[in-house]
Length: 308
Image 1 (spheres, rainbow, N blue to C red):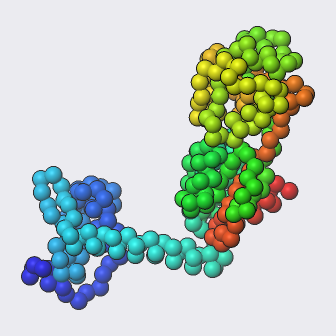
Image 2: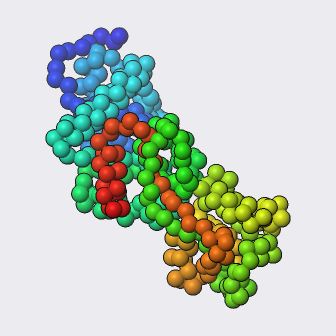
Image 3: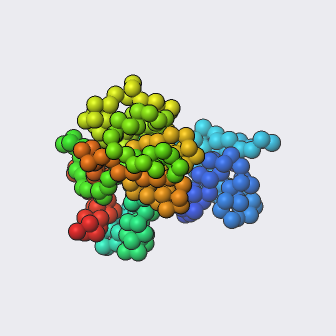
């Protein structure tokens, strides 16, 4: 330990620790100064205070920037834990006072994530303005995996889950339809026999999506094998499939909620499936059983009440 960094008794400013983390993450005093809206001189003074407090040099400086010393690495590890625990404490105290506050992480398949959940976010934010939503769009299988692993708080998916570790509610109900280009032959004559789709290029969703699984059930009921179809590709989102259809590349069984919005722009045509194969599906919101995080339960109860 260098003598010049001999520890001295003093009060430690929490903001200085936040500054330290910003420098460590950016590798630059100047970048940290810009991010924190401080002068570089103020940044340097804060680090000097920290080095005196801990009695150790925290950064090695070079023309390329700054890197952490071994002592700096120890402080970074512990500081992150301290700051995270302070955030959690603030949230828990707010919750105990009746205020709903925190981050709600949701993994959602395309249709609920892009067409259904946003309206609930807006309404819930009016009630609980201090809640932050972090949503990522994945297929149903990935969303459930993330929920099981604790990477997200909720999953919004397009297929029913019977796993006893989860609790689910119906978020929305919709019909699956056949979307075709606006000038397509089927757009003019209608779809009377589902096997007519065998004559045209077809676009599938990826294997792990809820829409794909529901589509395969419909095709199986109609006696249609994927091997008999003119599959031209698999795409990962409903939007990408709709774009391909609007450009005349193929047809697809797809969400009516998503397709109907594009149909209003006169780029595609939505056709109901023949009565024997009419398919309504439910979209679900899922959480892990025993989850006691207040913001999760508040949002869950809010949607339950909204759906009544």
